[in-house]
Image 1 (cartoon, helix red, strand yellow):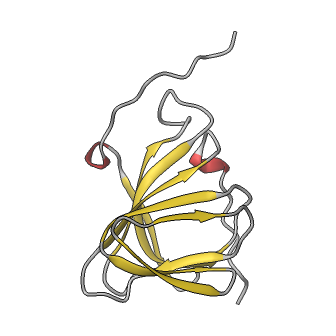
Image 2 (cartoon, helix red, strand yellow):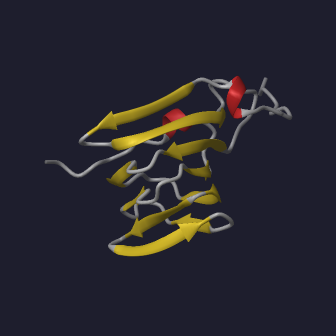
Image 3 (cartoon, helix red, strand yellow):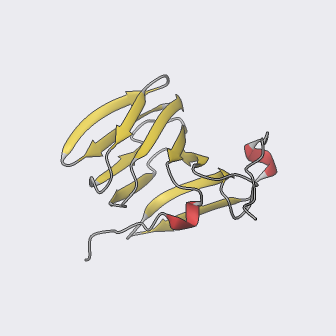
Length: 131
């Protein structure tokens, strides 16, 4: 018997904060909102990420494509070597396996909603360049 996905209504405040703060990954925090390991959902996972001033998610790759929706602040997204300034209201589509990262060079927090077309956030394997 297959478990059926269910509607979920949640907030970042209801979800634990996770993150990285090291030279390999950068300095970023996030709340996973939807993921089949924590919610009765399938086929998509999503969350909210925050970059404090000076914060960065270092360039990396992963198999699934990804969408960012910037809803607070400004930053710089780099996709396959091309940098673009993003601000509140910007949507970014990142193809699968494209090298990408995002940084906050402003004095205010940058927040964005991210979505993966996979049921569990744990299925997204981040690959950072060595050294």
